Structures are given as C-alpha cells and as structure tokens.
Length: 531
Image 1: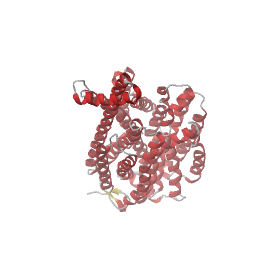
Image 2: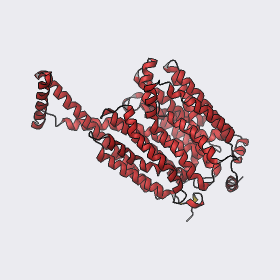
Image 3: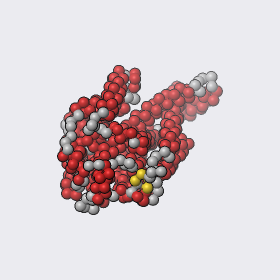
Image 4: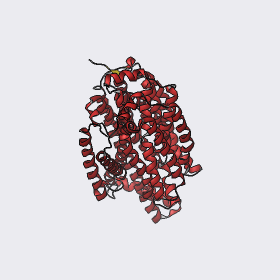
C-alpha cells in the first residue's frame, strides 16, 4: 500500500476510546520512566553506604540504567513493528515494573546493577511508544495538545526527580525510590491493556515479517554502550588521559559510523537512518539533541551551584527549582493551543530566543551573593523558553513523514533528546572542572606576598582571628586557608558564568536554524505548506 493510501487510512482510523484517556495512561507510564533517570542521583551516597560500596562504584547505578536505556530507544520503532506496538509497550512496562521491585530488594551492588540494566531496557521503550501512540490516537490538528501533555512528562519529571528522591531517601529509605514504581506500573499496565490499540497499518507491517539484523544490533549495542559510558565516566577518568576512555572513543566512533553505513543500505533497517534525508526531520532531531543539552545542563548547574558554593541542602536546592517546574506545568497546555494557531517554526524561534536571553542573563546574575528568591526567579527565566520548544519541535519532526514511520520518528527523536541530556551533563561537568582550574590559576597570581592589597587583607583577617582566640600562629594559618577557600569559590563561580555563556551561544545558533524549518499549516493539522 502506498504512503498516500496509508495517510488517508490513518486520517480515517480512530481509537475506540477517548484519545485523552489514552493520553493520560501512556503519559503516566512515560513520566514514571523519565522520573527514574534522575530520582536516584541524590540517593547514591546512601546506596553506597548501605551496600558496602564506594561512591565511585555507586555511580554505575546511573550509568548502567542509561546505557541499556540508550540502546533500546533508537530501535524501539523496529521492535514495535516486529512485535506490535501495544504488546511491546506492555512488555516494556512489565519489565520496568518487575525490575523496579528487584532493584528495591537488591542485597548487593552487583545485583542492583544487573536489575538497573533490566529496568533501563524496559524503560527505553516507554517514552517513544507513548509519543507514537499519541501521534496515532489524535487527529493531526490536535497533536500539539497531545504532545503538550507528553511534554509535561518529558520536561517536568527530571525537574522533580532529584527533589522527590532526596525527600524519600531522607525520610524513608533509598529502596523506596524504586518501590514507588510498583503501584503505578501495575495500574498502568492494566489500563494500557484495556484502552490502547494498534492502528491497522501496524498490523500489516507486523504481518509482512521483520528480518532480524544481527550485525546492526551488535554495532548499535557496542557503539551506544561505549558512547554512554565514556560520556558518564569521561571527566571522572580525565578523558583522553585514560586508556579506558580512549578505547571507548575508538569503539564508539567505529561502531556508530559502521552502523549508519550498514543501515543506510538495508531494505528493512533496524534504525531508519534514511529519514535524515528529510531536512525538516534532521533539523528537528538536531534541535531535540540541543534541547536535551540545555535542559539537563541547566538542571545540573543550578542545584550544583546552590549546594556546592552556597551550602544549600539537596531539599532546599530542589525547592529553588520547583517554581520553574510549576511554570512549565502551566505553560505546556497553552503551548498546545498555540500550535493550532501559529506556525511551529515561529514558536520554536521565540523559544530559542527566550532561552538564549535567559542563559545570558544567568551569566550576569550568577554570583556568590545570590539569594534564594533571586535563584528561584533565575530558574523561572531559564525554563520559560523550554515550553516554547518541546511541543513545536516534536510536532515539526512529523511534518512530511508518512504515518507508518511514526514509531521510528518517536524512537529517534527521544534518542536524540536523551543523548543530548547525557552530552549536556558531561559537558557542564567537564567545563566546571576545567574552567575552575583556569580561573583559579589566574586569581592565584594576585595572591602574592608582593601584592600589598593581598598582604593587607591577610594581616587584617589574621589579626581578627587571633583576637577571637585562635592565637597569632593559628590565626595566621587560618587566614590564608580562608582566603584560598574564597579564591576557589570565586574561581568556580566564574566557571559557571563561562558555562552559561556557551549554552547561550548554542541557543542563538538554534534560533537561526529555526527560520529554515519547513512551513506548516497549524489549522490544517500541522501538515507541510508547499511554496
């Protein structure tokens, strides 16, 4: 059957149940999975202490999940075609729920890592399949509204994850961050079984049979696995100063390059890389990748700054971020409505512009004297642009793509965003460490005994400490120690400013790219406009 016939059939087919009921069910599953990518971050020290492991070993709890998650994401469209989307979604949800129970009762770190691999594999199919189900369940003119609901899960969940994880771990136990998935997972599984159905074209794709691409699977597993591990462990192991990281770079480069070449010439590819010939889809994928970088970079930078330099607790830092989450919660439904009235590329352009302004504003506002109130408003400024990006970019990714590719679009789009989040986290971690060293070296040049201002400040502080009861000798040592501590904090603060500058430049580049996106007709369901 031709793509035109499939498009007509897709426009005619509608699910038996109210699509908004379906949307809530699949969005709940996606929210639970996205939440698990960040909720365990603050619990790592507690896990390490409870399981008799070091802090470095406990970070594999995050890495193991992200690796298996990243491997499943890009091939989820192929798996849905091979087994049926509803069946695949239910299997993923079942694996995720059962493995959450196993993670919660894991007696040692080795088993916890094994169960996290299973949990990440099961969770990898939930996000893209939820998005694909929404794309098929709603008529094209209502997709923006549906994606707004999905956007709440994709953007809000990482924001509340660390706060919720810290509260649960502090008040109960780290094991409960996994146990809370059980009731949600079980209820959602039965709701999916009752309300979700596959459109007719998926039945024909499955009936046609799918060839198992062993070479593609091997290249994907090795390439993505190596890439995810090197991004997660690169800064910790000093990047190319480590033979392990250098080996991973070579493996990832060779395997992923070979994967693209191999899949390009396959009749039934594991990952449909030929979709990147569509300029609109390729641009949307790049924007989702950049959005992942900026979203998770800011999400890492703000609480890290507040906790390491200003002494905030994880709970208080989470509260500083929570106002931004509320803004997004209110903004997403409005954005869904705007996509039916305004061309997506104009909304996207405004979103990147707002985000670039917020990042430049952050470079002016971030300092060691910032108040809690100012930090809250700074976070609000950083998230306003995000609401104008996720929904329209997701909508643009489907423009010009036939409906039988919806599963593949969802898989690749979510993969690009998730890899962006990994790159963003690795990028800001490395930049903060390296730029802190750079600024510290510059500032130390002024902390010399031949600098009268430095000597005067050190003597004044030493005298104050001596008169406070430390004595002359100890007061002198303490004065120099405090000055050096202040110098390190100032260097780190300047590193955060540099990092926000880089993020602002990235947003400006995406702002310019937004104007070359294909025009779409909002009132006509987001279909492309041919000039």
